[in-house]
Image 1: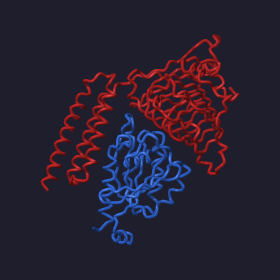
Image 2 (image 1 turned 180 degrees about the vertical axis):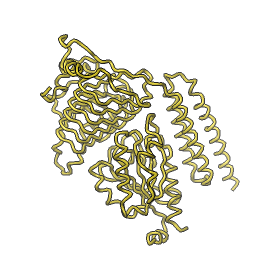
Image 3 (image 1 turned 180 degrees about the horizontal axis):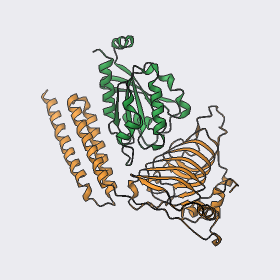
Image 4 (image 1 turned 30 degrees about the vertical axis):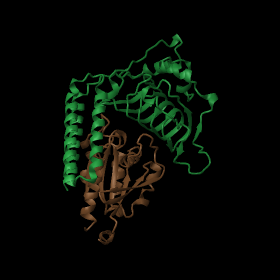
Length: 181
Length: 318
Protein backbone atom coordinates (compact mmCIF):
# COMPACT_ATOMS: atom_id res chain seq x y z
CA UNK A 1 0.00 0.00 0.00
CA UNK A 2 2.75 2.38 0.91
CA UNK A 3 4.49 1.64 -2.31
CA UNK A 4 1.33 2.47 -4.22
CA UNK A 5 1.17 5.84 -2.53
CA UNK A 6 4.82 6.41 -3.19
CA UNK A 7 4.27 5.58 -6.83
CA UNK A 8 1.28 7.86 -7.08
CA UNK A 9 3.41 10.73 -5.99
CA UNK A 10 5.96 10.21 -8.66
CA UNK A 11 5.74 12.89 -11.28
CA UNK A 12 7.66 11.10 -13.97
CA UNK A 13 5.77 7.92 -14.58
CA UNK A 14 8.67 5.63 -14.13
CA UNK A 15 8.55 1.86 -13.93
CA UNK A 16 11.05 -0.79 -13.13
CA UNK A 17 10.79 -3.88 -15.29
CA UNK A 18 12.88 -6.92 -14.44
CA UNK A 19 13.57 -9.33 -17.25
CA UNK A 20 14.67 -12.80 -16.27
CA UNK A 21 14.80 -16.30 -17.72
CA UNK A 22 17.23 -19.13 -18.37
CA UNK A 23 20.33 -18.45 -20.44
CA UNK A 24 19.76 -18.53 -24.19
CA UNK A 25 16.11 -17.50 -23.80
CA UNK A 26 16.65 -14.35 -25.84
CA UNK A 27 16.22 -11.65 -23.20
CA UNK A 28 18.88 -9.33 -24.56
CA UNK A 29 17.76 -9.87 -28.12
CA UNK A 30 14.22 -8.87 -27.16
CA UNK A 31 15.51 -5.66 -25.60
CA UNK A 32 17.71 -4.99 -28.62
CA UNK A 33 14.78 -5.43 -30.95
CA UNK A 34 12.64 -3.07 -28.91
CA UNK A 35 15.48 -0.53 -29.01
CA UNK A 36 15.79 -1.07 -32.76
CA UNK A 37 19.39 -2.21 -32.37
CA UNK A 38 21.15 -4.98 -34.27
CA UNK A 39 19.92 -8.37 -33.09
CA UNK A 40 22.47 -10.45 -34.98
CA UNK A 41 25.58 -9.78 -32.93
CA UNK A 42 24.31 -10.23 -29.40
CA UNK A 43 26.77 -11.91 -27.04
CA UNK A 44 25.64 -13.83 -23.95
CA UNK A 45 25.10 -11.36 -21.10
CA UNK A 46 27.90 -11.32 -18.55
CA UNK A 47 26.15 -9.31 -15.86
CA UNK A 48 23.19 -7.13 -16.55
CA UNK A 49 22.10 -4.45 -18.98
CA UNK A 50 19.78 -1.57 -18.18
CA UNK A 51 17.87 0.12 -20.94
CA UNK A 52 15.42 2.95 -20.58
CA UNK A 53 12.56 3.13 -22.99
CA UNK A 54 10.04 5.91 -23.27
CA UNK A 55 6.86 4.10 -24.03
CA UNK A 56 3.42 5.67 -24.23
CA UNK A 57 4.28 8.36 -21.77
CA UNK A 58 5.98 6.00 -19.39
CA UNK A 59 9.61 5.58 -18.69
CA UNK A 60 10.39 1.89 -18.57
CA UNK A 61 13.67 0.97 -16.96
CA UNK A 62 14.29 -2.53 -18.21
CA UNK A 63 16.75 -4.59 -16.21
CA UNK A 64 17.99 -7.39 -18.40
CA UNK A 65 19.93 -9.76 -16.17
CA UNK A 66 22.01 -12.65 -17.53
CA UNK A 67 20.52 -16.11 -17.15
CA UNK A 68 23.60 -18.32 -16.75
CA UNK A 69 23.54 -20.56 -13.71
CA UNK A 70 26.33 -18.57 -12.09
CA UNK A 71 24.31 -15.38 -12.40
CA UNK A 72 21.00 -16.75 -11.15
CA UNK A 73 22.07 -16.46 -7.53
CA UNK A 74 22.51 -12.74 -8.13
CA UNK A 75 19.01 -12.28 -9.47
CA UNK A 76 17.80 -11.50 -5.95
CA UNK A 77 19.87 -8.32 -5.98
CA UNK A 78 17.52 -6.90 -8.55
CA UNK A 79 14.16 -7.71 -6.96
CA UNK A 80 13.72 -4.51 -4.98
CA UNK A 81 11.12 -2.09 -6.33
CA UNK A 82 10.28 -4.23 -9.33
CA UNK A 83 6.92 -3.28 -10.82
CA UNK A 84 6.79 -5.91 -13.55
CA UNK A 85 8.55 -9.17 -14.08
CA UNK A 86 9.05 -10.37 -17.63
CA UNK A 87 9.94 -14.04 -17.71
CA UNK A 88 11.40 -15.12 -21.05
CA UNK A 89 11.12 -18.73 -22.20
CA UNK A 90 12.89 -20.32 -25.15
CA UNK A 91 10.11 -22.15 -27.02
CA UNK A 92 12.66 -24.39 -28.74
CA UNK A 93 14.37 -25.58 -25.56
CA UNK A 94 12.66 -28.87 -24.83
CA UNK A 95 15.53 -30.08 -22.67
CA UNK A 96 15.08 -27.43 -20.04
CA UNK A 97 11.39 -26.62 -19.74
CA UNK A 98 11.33 -28.24 -16.32
CA UNK A 99 14.35 -26.21 -15.14
CA UNK A 100 12.58 -23.19 -16.45
CA UNK A 101 9.42 -23.96 -14.45
CA UNK A 102 11.45 -24.56 -11.28
CA UNK A 103 13.31 -21.27 -11.58
CA UNK A 104 10.12 -19.35 -12.29
CA UNK A 105 8.16 -20.78 -9.37
CA UNK A 106 11.17 -20.17 -7.14
CA UNK A 107 11.05 -16.51 -8.08
CA UNK A 108 7.36 -16.22 -7.40
CA UNK A 109 7.98 -17.29 -3.78
CA UNK A 110 10.14 -14.22 -3.28
CA UNK A 111 8.52 -11.74 -0.99
CA UNK A 112 10.13 -8.80 -2.66
CA UNK A 113 8.51 -9.70 -5.96
CA UNK A 114 5.01 -10.06 -4.57
CA UNK A 115 3.98 -6.69 -5.87
CA UNK A 116 5.04 -7.38 -9.44
CA UNK A 117 2.89 -8.64 -12.28
CA UNK A 118 4.23 -11.36 -14.51
CA UNK A 119 4.46 -11.35 -18.28
CA UNK A 120 5.65 -14.66 -19.72
CA UNK A 121 7.24 -14.02 -23.09
CA UNK A 122 7.44 -17.24 -25.10
CA UNK A 123 10.29 -16.35 -27.40
CA UNK A 124 11.52 -17.91 -30.67
CA UNK A 125 8.02 -18.75 -31.83
CA UNK A 126 9.14 -17.85 -35.35
CA UNK A 127 11.06 -21.14 -35.32
CA UNK A 128 9.00 -23.96 -36.79
CA UNK A 129 8.83 -26.99 -34.54
CA UNK A 130 8.93 -24.97 -31.35
CA UNK A 131 6.77 -25.99 -28.42
CA UNK A 132 3.13 -25.01 -28.53
CA UNK A 133 1.44 -22.44 -26.39
CA UNK A 134 -0.30 -25.17 -24.36
CA UNK A 135 2.84 -27.23 -23.90
CA UNK A 136 4.54 -24.24 -22.35
CA UNK A 137 1.58 -23.12 -20.32
CA UNK A 138 1.33 -26.60 -18.84
CA UNK A 139 5.08 -27.17 -18.62
CA UNK A 140 5.52 -23.99 -16.64
CA UNK A 141 2.43 -24.75 -14.53
CA UNK A 142 1.22 -21.23 -15.10
CA UNK A 143 -2.33 -22.01 -14.07
CA UNK A 144 -1.08 -22.79 -10.58
CA UNK A 145 0.04 -19.21 -10.11
CA UNK A 146 -2.33 -17.50 -7.72
CA UNK A 147 -0.02 -14.97 -6.13
CA UNK A 148 0.61 -12.79 -9.14
CA UNK A 149 -1.35 -11.33 -11.97
CA UNK A 150 0.07 -12.97 -15.08
CA UNK A 151 -0.28 -13.41 -18.80
CA UNK A 152 1.49 -15.41 -21.48
CA UNK A 153 2.35 -14.12 -24.93
CA UNK A 154 4.14 -15.85 -27.82
CA UNK A 155 6.73 -13.57 -29.37
CA UNK A 156 9.82 -13.42 -31.53
CA UNK A 157 12.84 -11.27 -30.88
CA UNK A 158 13.92 -11.80 -34.48
CA UNK A 159 10.69 -10.74 -36.22
CA UNK A 160 9.46 -8.46 -33.45
CA UNK A 161 6.18 -10.30 -33.14
CA UNK A 162 4.15 -9.28 -30.07
CA UNK A 163 7.00 -7.38 -28.41
CA UNK A 164 5.00 -4.19 -28.55
CA UNK A 165 1.87 -5.99 -27.33
CA UNK A 166 3.88 -7.27 -24.38
CA UNK A 167 4.96 -3.77 -23.40
CA UNK A 168 1.35 -2.65 -23.82
CA UNK A 169 0.28 -5.22 -21.27
CA UNK A 170 3.01 -4.17 -18.86
CA UNK A 171 2.02 -0.53 -19.12
CA UNK A 172 -1.72 -1.11 -18.93
CA UNK A 173 -1.28 -3.34 -15.92
CA UNK A 174 0.81 -0.67 -14.25
CA UNK A 175 -1.81 1.94 -15.00
CA UNK A 176 -4.39 -0.14 -13.21
CA UNK A 177 -2.28 -0.99 -10.21
CA UNK A 178 0.29 1.68 -9.67
CA UNK A 179 -0.65 5.03 -11.00
CA UNK A 180 -3.65 6.79 -9.63
CA UNK A 181 -4.02 9.19 -12.48
CA UNK B 1 -7.70 18.83 -36.95
CA UNK B 2 -8.62 18.21 -40.52
CA UNK B 3 -5.05 17.60 -41.36
CA UNK B 4 -4.77 15.06 -38.60
CA UNK B 5 -7.87 13.25 -39.75
CA UNK B 6 -6.48 13.14 -43.25
CA UNK B 7 -3.29 11.59 -41.99
CA UNK B 8 -5.19 8.95 -40.08
CA UNK B 9 -7.37 8.30 -43.08
CA UNK B 10 -4.44 7.91 -45.44
CA UNK B 11 -2.66 5.70 -42.95
CA UNK B 12 -5.73 3.52 -42.87
CA UNK B 13 -5.71 3.30 -46.66
CA UNK B 14 -2.04 2.46 -46.73
CA UNK B 15 -2.40 -0.17 -44.05
CA UNK B 16 -5.38 -1.74 -45.80
CA UNK B 17 -3.43 -1.92 -49.03
CA UNK B 18 -0.51 -3.67 -47.39
CA UNK B 19 -2.80 -5.96 -45.45
CA UNK B 20 -4.68 -7.04 -48.56
CA UNK B 21 -1.48 -7.67 -50.47
CA UNK B 22 -0.07 -9.70 -47.62
CA UNK B 23 -3.23 -11.77 -47.27
CA UNK B 24 -3.09 -12.61 -50.95
CA UNK B 25 0.58 -13.52 -50.58
CA UNK B 26 -0.19 -15.92 -47.73
CA UNK B 27 -3.12 -17.48 -49.55
CA UNK B 28 -0.93 -18.07 -52.57
CA UNK B 29 1.64 -20.06 -50.62
CA UNK B 30 0.21 -23.51 -51.45
CA UNK B 31 0.66 -22.68 -55.13
CA UNK B 32 4.31 -21.75 -54.71
CA UNK B 33 6.82 -24.37 -55.71
CA UNK B 34 8.08 -26.24 -52.65
CA UNK B 35 11.70 -25.41 -53.39
CA UNK B 36 11.17 -21.67 -53.12
CA UNK B 37 8.43 -21.80 -50.52
CA UNK B 38 10.74 -21.13 -47.58
CA UNK B 39 11.78 -17.93 -49.30
CA UNK B 40 8.18 -16.99 -49.92
CA UNK B 41 7.39 -17.61 -46.26
CA UNK B 42 10.35 -15.49 -45.24
CA UNK B 43 9.07 -12.72 -47.48
CA UNK B 44 5.67 -12.90 -45.78
CA UNK B 45 7.34 -12.75 -42.37
CA UNK B 46 9.35 -9.74 -43.48
CA UNK B 47 6.21 -8.01 -44.73
CA UNK B 48 4.46 -8.63 -41.44
CA UNK B 49 7.43 -7.21 -39.57
CA UNK B 50 7.42 -4.23 -41.89
CA UNK B 51 3.73 -3.66 -41.38
CA UNK B 52 4.14 -3.75 -37.64
CA UNK B 53 7.02 -1.29 -38.03
CA UNK B 54 4.75 1.07 -39.95
CA UNK B 55 2.18 0.95 -37.19
CA UNK B 56 4.87 1.51 -34.62
CA UNK B 57 6.15 4.56 -36.47
CA UNK B 58 2.64 5.96 -36.64
CA UNK B 59 2.05 5.47 -32.95
CA UNK B 60 2.64 9.15 -32.27
CA UNK B 61 -0.51 10.24 -34.06
CA UNK B 62 -2.74 7.18 -34.04
CA UNK B 63 -5.31 6.94 -31.25
CA UNK B 64 -4.74 4.05 -28.87
CA UNK B 65 -7.85 2.25 -30.02
CA UNK B 66 -6.76 2.32 -33.67
CA UNK B 67 -3.30 1.17 -32.73
CA UNK B 68 -4.70 -1.79 -30.94
CA UNK B 69 -6.94 -2.82 -33.79
CA UNK B 70 -4.02 -2.51 -36.22
CA UNK B 71 -1.93 -4.65 -33.90
CA UNK B 72 -4.70 -7.20 -33.77
CA UNK B 73 -4.89 -7.31 -37.53
CA UNK B 74 -1.16 -7.89 -37.67
CA UNK B 75 -1.42 -10.63 -35.11
CA UNK B 76 -4.18 -12.27 -37.14
CA UNK B 77 -1.94 -12.14 -40.18
CA UNK B 78 0.89 -13.80 -38.24
CA UNK B 79 -1.45 -16.52 -37.07
CA UNK B 80 -2.81 -17.04 -40.52
CA UNK B 81 0.72 -17.45 -41.83
CA UNK B 82 1.62 -19.85 -39.03
CA UNK B 83 -1.51 -21.87 -39.78
CA UNK B 84 -0.59 -21.99 -43.44
CA UNK B 85 2.95 -23.10 -42.64
CA UNK B 86 1.68 -25.90 -40.48
CA UNK B 87 -0.65 -27.14 -43.19
CA UNK B 88 2.14 -26.98 -45.77
CA UNK B 89 4.87 -28.59 -43.70
CA UNK B 90 5.88 -31.74 -45.51
CA UNK B 91 5.97 -35.01 -43.66
CA UNK B 92 9.69 -35.32 -43.27
CA UNK B 93 11.23 -38.64 -43.77
CA UNK B 94 14.55 -39.26 -42.29
CA UNK B 95 17.10 -41.96 -42.46
CA UNK B 96 20.60 -42.57 -41.44
CA UNK B 97 23.05 -44.35 -43.57
CA UNK B 98 24.47 -46.89 -41.27
CA UNK B 99 27.90 -47.20 -42.72
CA UNK B 100 28.88 -50.78 -42.54
CA UNK B 101 32.27 -51.24 -44.00
CA UNK B 102 34.84 -53.92 -43.84
CA UNK B 103 37.21 -52.97 -41.07
CA UNK B 104 40.14 -54.52 -42.86
CA UNK B 105 39.67 -52.30 -45.89
CA UNK B 106 41.81 -49.56 -44.39
CA UNK B 107 38.91 -47.34 -43.63
CA UNK B 108 40.12 -46.14 -40.32
CA UNK B 109 39.60 -46.07 -36.65
CA UNK B 110 36.22 -44.51 -36.44
CA UNK B 111 34.56 -47.14 -38.51
CA UNK B 112 36.42 -49.92 -36.85
CA UNK B 113 35.33 -48.58 -33.56
CA UNK B 114 31.81 -48.27 -34.77
CA UNK B 115 31.53 -51.82 -35.96
CA UNK B 116 32.76 -53.33 -32.74
CA UNK B 117 29.96 -51.66 -30.92
CA UNK B 118 27.17 -51.92 -33.39
CA UNK B 119 27.33 -55.69 -33.48
CA UNK B 120 25.99 -55.71 -29.96
CA UNK B 121 23.51 -52.97 -30.42
CA UNK B 122 20.27 -53.04 -32.31
CA UNK B 123 20.69 -51.39 -35.66
CA UNK B 124 17.63 -49.21 -35.25
CA UNK B 125 18.56 -45.56 -35.05
CA UNK B 126 16.34 -43.32 -33.04
CA UNK B 127 16.75 -40.16 -35.02
CA UNK B 128 13.29 -38.80 -35.32
CA UNK B 129 12.16 -35.59 -36.85
CA UNK B 130 9.83 -34.33 -34.20
CA UNK B 131 7.63 -31.82 -35.91
CA UNK B 132 10.30 -29.83 -37.71
CA UNK B 133 13.13 -30.66 -35.39
CA UNK B 134 15.82 -33.23 -35.75
CA UNK B 135 16.28 -35.27 -32.61
CA UNK B 136 19.18 -37.66 -32.20
CA UNK B 137 19.46 -39.34 -28.83
CA UNK B 138 20.74 -42.41 -27.05
CA UNK B 139 23.29 -43.47 -29.60
CA UNK B 140 26.43 -45.40 -29.01
CA UNK B 141 29.27 -46.42 -31.27
CA UNK B 142 27.78 -45.32 -34.56
CA UNK B 143 28.61 -43.08 -37.42
CA UNK B 144 25.62 -40.88 -37.90
CA UNK B 145 25.37 -39.02 -41.14
CA UNK B 146 21.99 -37.37 -41.15
CA UNK B 147 21.01 -36.66 -44.69
CA UNK B 148 18.19 -34.16 -44.54
CA UNK B 149 16.14 -33.94 -47.70
CA UNK B 150 16.76 -31.14 -50.16
CA UNK B 151 13.91 -29.01 -48.88
CA UNK B 152 15.32 -29.16 -45.38
CA UNK B 153 15.14 -25.48 -44.66
CA UNK B 154 12.00 -26.28 -42.72
CA UNK B 155 14.10 -28.00 -40.09
CA UNK B 156 14.39 -25.76 -37.15
CA UNK B 157 16.01 -27.12 -34.04
CA UNK B 158 18.69 -29.72 -33.66
CA UNK B 159 18.51 -31.68 -30.43
CA UNK B 160 21.43 -34.02 -29.73
CA UNK B 161 21.53 -35.93 -26.47
CA UNK B 162 23.06 -38.96 -24.79
CA UNK B 163 25.57 -39.90 -27.43
CA UNK B 164 28.67 -41.94 -26.76
CA UNK B 165 31.48 -42.93 -29.07
CA UNK B 166 29.84 -41.60 -32.21
CA UNK B 167 30.70 -39.48 -35.18
CA UNK B 168 27.89 -37.13 -36.13
CA UNK B 169 28.52 -35.52 -39.46
CA UNK B 170 26.30 -33.14 -41.40
CA UNK B 171 26.57 -32.60 -45.14
CA UNK B 172 28.74 -29.66 -46.16
CA UNK B 173 27.65 -26.23 -47.22
CA UNK B 174 24.07 -26.19 -46.03
CA UNK B 175 22.17 -24.78 -43.10
CA UNK B 176 19.33 -26.73 -41.60
CA UNK B 177 18.73 -25.37 -38.14
CA UNK B 178 17.91 -22.12 -36.43
CA UNK B 179 19.11 -23.36 -33.08
CA UNK B 180 20.76 -26.35 -31.49
CA UNK B 181 20.86 -27.94 -28.05
CA UNK B 182 23.51 -30.50 -27.30
CA UNK B 183 23.50 -32.47 -24.06
CA UNK B 184 25.38 -35.42 -22.63
CA UNK B 185 27.97 -36.38 -25.24
CA UNK B 186 31.15 -38.35 -24.65
CA UNK B 187 34.06 -39.65 -26.71
CA UNK B 188 32.59 -38.38 -29.93
CA UNK B 189 33.15 -36.11 -32.87
CA UNK B 190 30.37 -33.68 -33.66
CA UNK B 191 30.95 -32.25 -37.10
CA UNK B 192 28.09 -29.82 -37.40
CA UNK B 193 29.89 -27.49 -39.79
CA UNK B 194 27.64 -24.65 -40.90
CA UNK B 195 24.41 -26.51 -40.20
CA UNK B 196 23.30 -24.32 -37.29
CA UNK B 197 22.61 -20.71 -38.14
CA UNK B 198 21.67 -19.60 -34.67
CA UNK B 199 22.58 -20.06 -31.02
CA UNK B 200 24.20 -23.26 -29.79
CA UNK B 201 23.58 -24.41 -26.23
CA UNK B 202 25.86 -27.16 -24.97
CA UNK B 203 25.76 -29.03 -21.65
CA UNK B 204 27.74 -32.00 -20.42
CA UNK B 205 30.52 -32.91 -22.85
CA UNK B 206 33.46 -35.15 -22.12
CA UNK B 207 36.29 -36.06 -24.49
CA UNK B 208 34.61 -34.58 -27.50
CA UNK B 209 35.73 -32.69 -30.57
CA UNK B 210 33.23 -30.25 -32.03
CA UNK B 211 33.48 -28.53 -35.40
CA UNK B 212 30.80 -25.90 -35.66
CA UNK B 213 29.78 -22.44 -36.76
CA UNK B 214 27.12 -20.64 -34.75
CA UNK B 215 25.81 -17.21 -33.79
CA UNK B 216 26.18 -17.71 -30.05
CA UNK B 217 27.91 -20.38 -28.02
CA UNK B 218 27.12 -21.26 -24.43
CA UNK B 219 28.99 -24.26 -23.13
CA UNK B 220 28.42 -25.80 -19.72
CA UNK B 221 30.02 -28.68 -17.84
CA UNK B 222 32.43 -29.61 -20.57
CA UNK B 223 35.62 -31.50 -19.83
CA UNK B 224 38.44 -32.17 -22.26
CA UNK B 225 36.79 -30.74 -25.33
CA UNK B 226 38.34 -29.32 -28.49
CA UNK B 227 36.27 -26.85 -30.44
CA UNK B 228 36.91 -25.71 -33.98
CA UNK B 229 34.70 -22.71 -33.89
CA UNK B 230 33.28 -19.92 -35.96
CA UNK B 231 31.22 -17.71 -33.68
CA UNK B 232 29.92 -14.23 -34.46
CA UNK B 233 29.60 -13.23 -30.81
CA UNK B 234 31.66 -13.85 -27.69
CA UNK B 235 31.47 -17.51 -26.66
CA UNK B 236 30.93 -18.24 -22.98
CA UNK B 237 31.83 -21.24 -20.87
CA UNK B 238 30.56 -22.16 -17.42
CA UNK B 239 31.74 -25.02 -15.20
CA UNK B 240 34.17 -26.24 -17.84
CA UNK B 241 37.74 -27.45 -17.76
CA UNK B 242 40.28 -28.51 -20.33
CA UNK B 243 38.49 -26.79 -23.18
CA UNK B 244 40.56 -25.76 -26.18
CA UNK B 245 39.50 -23.50 -28.99
CA UNK B 246 40.68 -23.28 -32.58
CA UNK B 247 39.30 -21.14 -35.38
CA UNK B 248 37.09 -22.57 -38.09
CA UNK B 249 37.23 -20.86 -41.46
CA UNK B 250 34.02 -19.93 -43.19
CA UNK B 251 35.03 -21.68 -46.39
CA UNK B 252 32.68 -24.48 -47.31
CA UNK B 253 30.21 -23.73 -44.55
CA UNK B 254 27.60 -22.45 -46.93
CA UNK B 255 25.87 -19.28 -47.94
CA UNK B 256 24.70 -18.32 -44.48
CA UNK B 257 28.29 -17.79 -43.37
CA UNK B 258 29.78 -16.05 -46.37
CA UNK B 259 29.13 -12.55 -45.07
CA UNK B 260 30.69 -13.15 -41.67
CA UNK B 261 33.19 -10.39 -40.88
CA UNK B 262 34.48 -11.43 -37.55
CA UNK B 263 35.11 -14.78 -35.94
CA UNK B 264 35.27 -14.30 -32.17
CA UNK B 265 36.33 -17.88 -31.45
CA UNK B 266 39.07 -16.86 -28.99
CA UNK B 267 37.23 -14.11 -27.09
CA UNK B 268 35.89 -16.55 -24.57
CA UNK B 269 34.27 -15.45 -21.31
CA UNK B 270 34.42 -17.90 -18.43
CA UNK B 271 31.68 -17.45 -15.84
CA UNK B 272 33.77 -19.34 -13.35
CA UNK B 273 36.78 -17.08 -13.67
CA UNK B 274 36.54 -13.46 -12.64
CA UNK B 275 40.21 -12.60 -12.29
CA UNK B 276 41.97 -10.66 -14.93
CA UNK B 277 44.50 -13.40 -15.61
CA UNK B 278 43.64 -15.89 -18.28
CA UNK B 279 41.16 -18.55 -17.17
CA UNK B 280 42.79 -21.93 -16.52
CA UNK B 281 39.67 -23.63 -17.84
CA UNK B 282 40.27 -22.92 -21.49
CA UNK B 283 43.12 -22.36 -23.89
CA UNK B 284 43.84 -21.77 -27.52
CA UNK B 285 44.58 -25.08 -29.17
CA UNK B 286 48.25 -24.91 -30.20
CA UNK B 287 48.60 -24.67 -33.95
CA UNK B 288 50.85 -27.70 -34.03
CA UNK B 289 48.07 -29.82 -32.58
CA UNK B 290 45.28 -28.52 -34.75
CA UNK B 291 43.65 -30.61 -37.40
CA UNK B 292 44.35 -28.88 -40.68
CA UNK B 293 41.63 -27.44 -42.86
CA UNK B 294 42.55 -30.02 -45.51
CA UNK B 295 42.00 -32.84 -43.13
CA UNK B 296 38.64 -31.45 -42.08
CA UNK B 297 37.85 -31.20 -45.73
CA UNK B 298 38.54 -34.90 -45.99
CA UNK B 299 36.31 -35.64 -43.04
CA UNK B 300 33.67 -33.47 -44.57
CA UNK B 301 33.81 -35.50 -47.71
CA UNK B 302 33.04 -38.47 -45.57
CA UNK B 303 36.58 -39.69 -45.84
CA UNK B 304 36.64 -41.20 -42.43
CA UNK B 305 40.36 -41.67 -42.52
CA UNK B 306 42.82 -42.62 -39.81
CA UNK B 307 42.62 -39.08 -38.53
CA UNK B 308 39.25 -39.71 -37.04
CA UNK B 309 40.70 -42.28 -34.75
CA UNK B 310 42.53 -39.53 -32.96
CA UNK B 311 39.31 -37.74 -32.10
CA UNK B 312 37.16 -40.67 -31.21
CA UNK B 313 39.86 -42.48 -29.31
CA UNK B 314 40.71 -39.48 -27.26
CA UNK B 315 40.41 -41.53 -24.16
CA UNK B 316 42.64 -44.51 -24.61
CA UNK B 317 40.28 -46.99 -23.05
CA UNK B 318 38.62 -47.86 -26.33
